[in-house]
Amino acid sequence: AAKVARAHGGFFTSSTDPVMQAQVQIVGVRDPEAGRVRLLEAREELMRLADAQDPKLVEFGGGVRDLSVRVVPSRAGTYVVAHLRVDVRDAMGANAVNTMAEAVADRAGEIAGGRTLLRILTNKADLRLARARAVFDAEALGGQAVADDIVHAAALAEADPYRAATHNKGIMNGISAVVLATGNDTRAVESGAHSHAVSPDGRYTSLSRFEKDADGNIVGTLELPMPVGLVGGATRLHPVAQAAVALLGTTTAADLAETVVAVGLAQNFGAVRALATEGIQRGHMSLHARNVALTAGATAEEAPAVVARLVADKQVRADHAERILAELRAGG
Image (cartoon, rainbow, N blue to C red; front, top):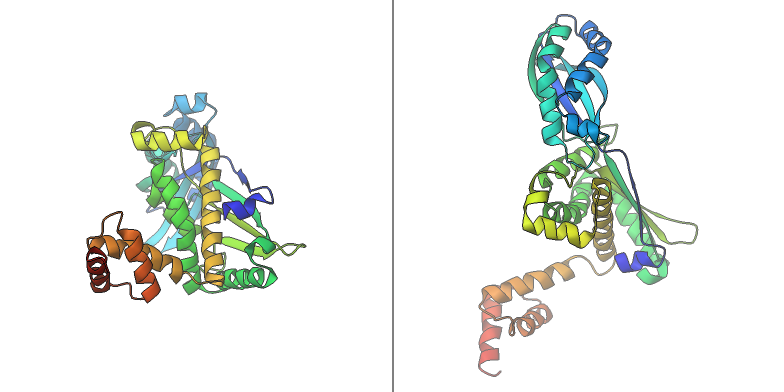
């Protein structure tokens, strides 16, 4: 996918500021709408209190950017929920925003007129977005008929949640690999991505889009929350994560986020192209055949011959692999 995209300049990326949010839940407010307004009146006070918890972050240009308040009805009552919006710079930011939420919780509850309960970040990091775009040459893909089928496959993922779930899983195959390799939180990224896949009308849909441009080439785009960092946590401590970051040559969280999304788009395009042409099973079965061959006892030297026979015979099973291996070793 990356080779095909390279003909038209490769992957173009952008991102927003690294803003994470923490929620402070306040229960038992008798006048929740008025409580919301009281908290907004105290916005500057609460922001100062939060910033005081992390002067180093403020020194590096980060810190609280805003405070918003929502009234959230539920089956158990109506809650006043304050959101601290914090620029966490090159950190993932969970510890920073959680500490700030803890610090302002009691004062926020006092102002709103209720009891504070939850105070924790949200993984719906919809203020911290990363984007990738690439043009995939139609002729390199096999012509306009293939390009049209890729658009049809992508359109089904946009319209149908059953297809969207698998389509988005393909995106996350690439994204989760880079997030894990660099010592970041795969579960946080995955939950944020899937929540972002819910459209404003409540429908689960595709995270990516594939369209044809004026020249008939495929233009792929992907935008999703990307809360990854280079400061703190396993990224700075784990030797494998350090090696992966060094291999990428990335020096900022924004660059890492954009790289991750570019990988997700490339992975997604490769899968959709395979589905629209030879089908995904051909590649899957080749990988599965190697696992079956090794499980049957094939050595690294014997595995390629066993895999070739399993695929050619269209019988990717352990018993068949054992028979092929026996024949090979007998000189057959």
